[in-house]
Length: 571
Image (cartoon, rainbow, N blue to C red; front, side, top):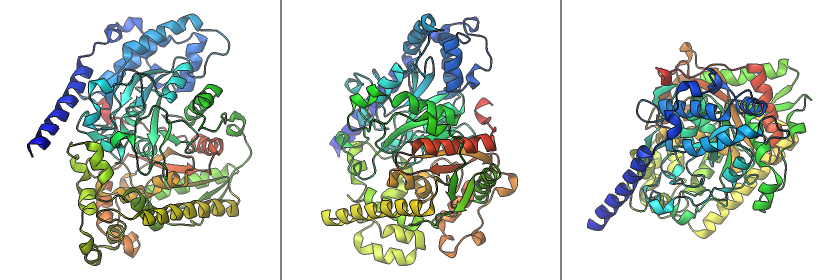
């Protein structure tokens, strides 16, 4: 007991020291007066594409623009009055690089991210920074990155200016961004709600126009959930298309047990689809491929992205496991109608496996070691944040009691109780899960080909941004985002509408009988006071059809022309 207490104190000391170092760091560029900026009061609204073009042409001073956004980060992104989205700041370092760009303005063939300030998710290695994954044990000073991860090195060479780090959730496996180091990130649309996770800090920064572009990572929706909650665009590329070299895994010794089954993917968060395409174009380059031979040498095909040939798109309005709210279904059907009127063909798509099968398989794989062992070991003595309480209780139910509990609770929770086993499962059983996953992927590939479609669209999530602390109580709602991760497919999300006042409900009588349960009550609670929150649709395509996925997203963006913006953070 004494050793445990001593360990917790040591971890807390390291974490406090990391925060103190962050807070005491001086940033000389923030002291520059406004007259040293470019004077463009709407410069923060510029997209990454626009920023690059303006800087390259000499119409926007990269250094002055960076100072503007750095001050915006300080005003809205920190914990003192802001949303607490930032873990570390590198304003002066980025400013010095930005100043050097002035001599190159007007040159031909300037790099695609020339002068674009960006944020980088805290788990993605960046020279001089901590990559904690929300774990106190990773805050020890000697663990600071000695060099950039490959993805950061490549975007720097593409001209980007990494200047802030975005907050994450503890262990990076919850749809919220809260931990015992940096604290909790708030949603810029509603401070009482989550910004999503685990790339929640970056999602909030992009939504508040603190940066036009961010690099996140996604293993069950960790790019797309923050994008959905914050009303921006998020894109998860085909798994394995981009390198993870230099990115930490928030598990003990960086050994993630399920990484070979459902690997992480890095990708962009932005306010426009074109910015996501620009990111892909910028990183899918020969130097990137030469630095990691596990990555397929596939340059981003701009011709495929910019095609004008009509698309055939399949759609589904529910996965049968978690019924979407009225606003989510409306947003989908309005999108389908807009696409159809524009000359595209939209047809219903029959799911080869439903949410009951998909979500339970993910739970079985992720919990195969039993009792949340991989997460507990990753903490190395640190306490779980309270958000994990429900999952921990479910994971630690004795096996003898599981059959009885299944008969006493509702069908969905009973189904999930049966998916886990205290103490973990055998190697043989885990192997069978691997076979189940391969069969699932094969069934979706065949169904896609049989349908003769180019892409699939569906509600991005069944409900909007969650109230703080609810993430792990209603993880079942995220069956919609984890699907693409299980398939390894590229997938993106973008906002299409907002919740109307008469849609702030989740009525039991509208649901299938097997969904009238505790999850439905939590969904109804989420819908209260939700008017004005963003609602997104999701698009996915088979492996290595990233350009087609982004093209479909671009079509939707141009047709829907979503324009709502968060206001809560400015009050």
